[in-house]
Image (tube, rainbow, N blue to C red; front, top):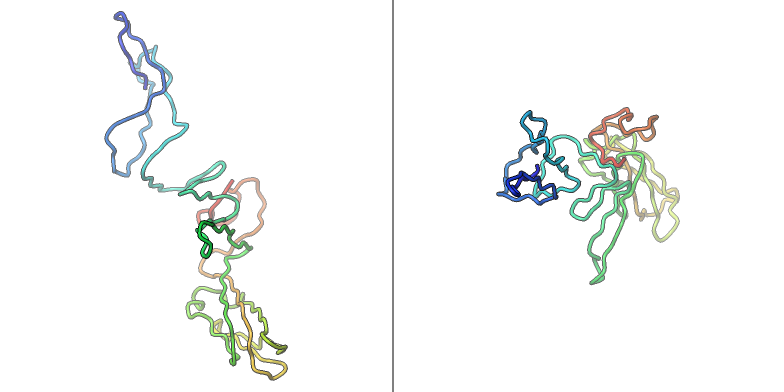
Length: 208
């Protein structure tokens, strides 16, 4: 809103951009939208400013947040990739930057080493989290050729391995599965806007 002063008994509008001040309100309340179309609003008043930049200590969003380019939170940008940057775990004065693995599913993995056993016991929570029909297994034999074979997967909770050479099993394993506790990802869809997505947009971090 414009401020008015008296110069030679004439009211003069000061239309310069000014900072605001006052006591901080700690309530989560709505931002005021000022109206200037009152019938008694001075005809010589300045056009009000709108916020090109704004600052606030805490913000509660009850709906969605849409960003035309990118969102920065605590120095981390939400972009079309999912990078993260942390202090280097072994080199003092250095940092480490990685990008999250991407894929066309909500994937879960379990890995480890299997020695002198032919059963990979999957975590108990996989029964409620992972689609048993989606489970795949990768085996890497250690020390010698063992002709390892995935014999079968029982109840989505254990993987049975056998050796074609009847040798003792010693291998690394990597088991993947797809989560079943939510909507299945639709990887490609026809449309020019995210609003054309045929599934639930609210569960995704979206960059336009």
